[in-house]
Image (cartoon, rainbow, N blue to C red; front, side, top):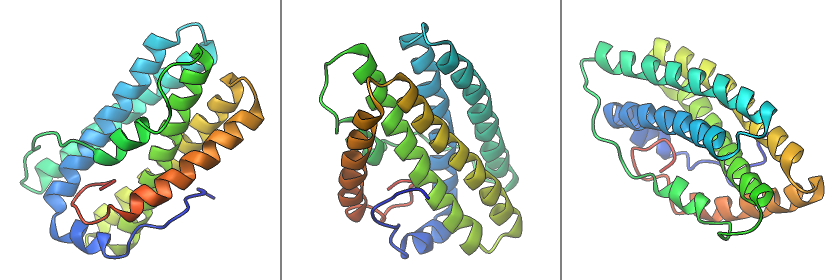
Amino acid sequence: MLGLKLPTDPRWVNIAKQNLEEILTDHAYCEQKAASTAISLIIGFPQYSELVSAMTDLVQEEMSHFKMVHDIILEKGYSLGRERKDIYVLQLLNFFPKGGSKSIHLTHKLLCAALIEARSCERFRILSEELEDAKLRNFYRKLMISEAHHYTLFLKLAKKYAPSKELVDQKWEALLEFEGKLIKKLGDQERIHG
């Protein structure tokens, strides 16, 4: 369903289990960055009413997820660490060339957001199946479903606002191929995407 070209290395979950505090901190910042992305889309493209409405809802949802993750961090006696640079996201965002029309720029942003959500969905599924803590497994199962909805939302918006559906399909396939090669180099760090 997600279209990912390469699944997560099975060893990643062992790293996640052994570094749960780091994973939770990274996850909290991922939720915060997702909210920031939605806000930046509202600011950058206010003329698209459907986009603004969808992103307004998304900001609220992502910040509620941030709060949920932060609450888990506190319940476990951890504290929210510092934000980490997300190499995965930075490289995805640099895949498409800069410049072009406003609609192409929006298409690129939406496709990158869709892919980030798809990979998060896949990683949350793994956590929902592999973590020992039943409460955390259930939490990640619910978030997996949410990420799947976000993934399809971003793809739908890309198809709505792009110059053509064919262009979206072509760019999406190229991005998926790139991400498959990128993810092959990652998976050895205590990061949601790393």
